[in-house]
Structures are given as C-alpha cells and as structure tokens.
Image (cartoon, rainbow, N blue to C red; front, side, top):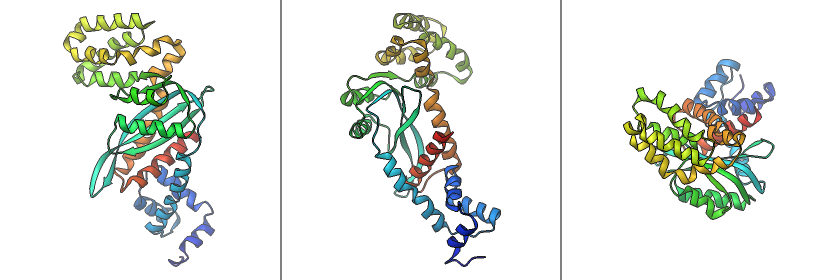
Length: 291
C-alpha cells in the first residue's frame, strides 16, 4: 500500500486512467464518499476525499471555457428549459433552477449552448442569458421553444426580434393536467391532442372551442382558459410542415436531456454548492453528447 504522500503517484502508475475513472463515476452521480468506497473495494486503494475533489474540481476550468465558447451565428431551433436541483446555500438546502439552452442545427446536430444556475426561474434572468448568448456570437434563432414563463417571449424578442417564439406544447399539457384529478388524466390527454394536432391555427381554435364546450372542458374550465392565455404563442408552429411541428410539440430532444440530468441529480440527493452541481451537470451533458 502506498503512503499518503505518494498515493496519487502510485495510483496513477498502476491505473493510467485513474483521473478519468473518478470523473466518470462523478458524472454518474456518485458522491465523493461513494467514489472513495468504490475505489477501495474494487482496487484496494485508499483515496482521500481531498484528492477526489481536486480531480473533479479541475473540470471547472473546462466548464468555464465551454460556457464562454463562441457560438454559431444562427440556429434554426433552440429549446429553453429549466429543471430544479437541490443545492446547499448559506446553510440551507435550496431548490435552485438550472437553466438549459439546447440548439438544433440545420443538419439535426444537437448542441447545448449553456447551463446556468439561479435561485428561481424568471424572465429577467432569461434576458441575461439571451444577452450572454448574443455576446458569444448568436445572431438569430428561427424558432425558440419556451416553457410558458411569463415575460420570457419578450426577453427573447428584445435580443433576437425576428425569432418565432413557441410555447412548449408538452409544458402546456402538463400545466393543463395540474387542474385534473389523477383518475381523469388519461382520457383528458387525447382530448387535448385534437387541438395541437389540428391542420392549421383556425382548426386548432375550433378544436379548443369544442373541447371547452365538451365534457372535459366543462368539468375543468381552467384548462381552456390556460390555452387561450397562451394562444398567441401556441399558434406559430401551425405555419410549419408536419415534420417540423412534430419536433416542436414532442420536445424529445430536451426531454431526453432533462431525463439524464434528473437521473444523475436524483442519485446525489443535493449538492454542497453551485460548483459541485455545475461539475456534475456539465459532465452528464458531455457524456450525453458522446452517445
């Protein structure tokens, strides 16, 4: 067994990809304590928590460089979304918002434009995000898909005024189901499908009116009110071909990414600080990009 002072050198000589193994385990959501136990059980190495933290902290330089890299001037489609992550802050575990911007290039390539951590999800912060993206070279977005946050469309239009802002249909459906009892959710979803699967905006409004006058609309009137409030940013995607509309209303790209992030975050429970959360989120996104 190596002495404490020579432990890393000894470990590195026995395992040339030692650092990579630690980073890979961290990216899977393992805590420093879990990584230490795993290395001891698997390789018989007693690795200090400080060494593991030092190895993972080196990722932060890479994160900063990635977060400030130049962007393409134009993206046909960008999904903007936020997930919640528990992070310790000033002695309390707070439910912070992690903002994600996922761009889709013309050839279908996906690129995460950036990730940001903030206390709450708000339009003022999204305006800062948009300005940061502009400063990194982003000049235009054809379609921006957002989660219905009040003021967000205005934040986008202030920076990229020609962008078509589309409310995420998946988020709108989820919000609609918040008004519905659990046993009624299954039949309500196909009733809503007639609205966003309509052939055009006029047919979509007719379907909304029929839903509103029908059984589910009468039982849960708040649903139709919610769709009407957001209608200005629901209708834009009707102008596009079915193939484009399907990409927008299914939001598979951002949902798949969020699923990976939530799975890793769930394994950790909560993070000691923002940097620890940022390291993991960046590594998870990196691994997702390689798949």
